[in-house]
Length: 595
Image 1 (cartoon, one colour):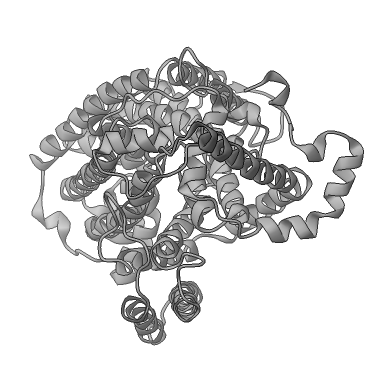
Image 2: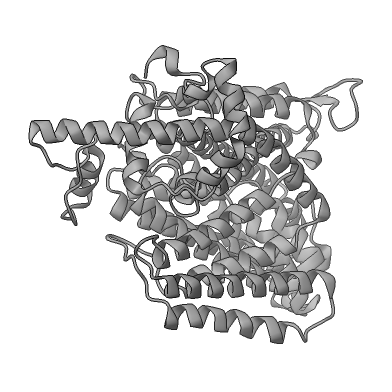
């Protein structure tokens, strides 16, 4: 990538006159880009804008343990006790199972996209292909914010657990100042930990995978010890009553525990660095979620058998549980397990967030400088340092409770969009889907989404109501059944696809909307403020950069085709040929060379 083209290289920004014309053309350009869908060929082409390719070094084993490392963090050691004590009781094992099923449905959708579109952009790339440029940008901007704030929260949590491991209070290692409350406890250790994670991620993705694997395996040994030692002190009477808070308590806890599964989406951003995407991604993603779900359910089972749920400590449930049975020394093992979990979440998150930013930059929605891949390390150094620096600034000043109130909604919103994207990918291709079937598809999709929203709203507005569940649930079922019966699928995955379409993505849509409905008002206010801010950026810069890039990309493709015709060539794109070789499948049809 030429040095002079790294910052706002598009024609709209060459001079003030061009920029003024671009601003006046905003409505026309927005109409052009609002539902402009990229294709897989274009997504693979823009990988070259990073200058160098990322190194294909990861196997299914790496991806599986990256998934475990990204998901199992400190939350399991804290949130389990809180929800068992106050919301679900011993029935928390059902809550964890339901949350795991909801997460697995989303993983199925991510897996098909990651196999079919093996690029670093994760959900941004998937949404750009299926739902268009505008929706993809809104979704991606929220995921980037979630990663930024999540990294800050995890880093401050690392400091707290490290303090408890060396027999200090969680806040004792922070510097207290006279700044406003909530921002007055400075955390230099969190900053150091973030930049150390960045150094490892920049050095090598494979090295990150190895360190994550070692830490994750050690963490699993600690979890296994907790389960075995805890069950040795189990008392069956502690499981009575099993559902002290009723069915609503089970579902309420499930909506909170779902967030213990977040992090797997970072693994999908590693598709570009996977040796055999068609085999490794499904095994890695689904295998990691299975391991996490089993570990969560067994830990919850152990805790509730060790201690009566009303007596579970909500701050350090496992440490106090072992103290109760006379094993005080085990609290240090629990702290060590939590610390290792936080470290792996931080490592995988650092890798994943940089890949998101890299692919957004490749689309020129932000300056392409952020998308450069270093030739020596074959990692996106600029994107990694940018995200980590932003997280470090937030982590240095901001308390965990403030950060926590800003999380979660973005992930569920993205998961909802990805599930919609799967249905669009299978059932609707412009120019291929007939007008009749297209109309039926969007009608049934509207029924699915509207009935899901109805259930979520009724849950929030009528805590004791039941009647409308019997109305909205059959409507959702009939909408999904109508899609399955009356609308033919127009695309079949070549390698691996979501099973039982449309039922799996439709259920994923319903569960993600339901979980969105359980969030508090502050979460939606934050979502609205951030979305408004990124829309201002999009209308002033991102839209025009994307518009110019799309035009230039078409010219670029045309130039390649002319060059191929002159040379008498008709071969596949390098990237597509690479993918076919990796997956050992024949090409369905020849594609013109892109360079």
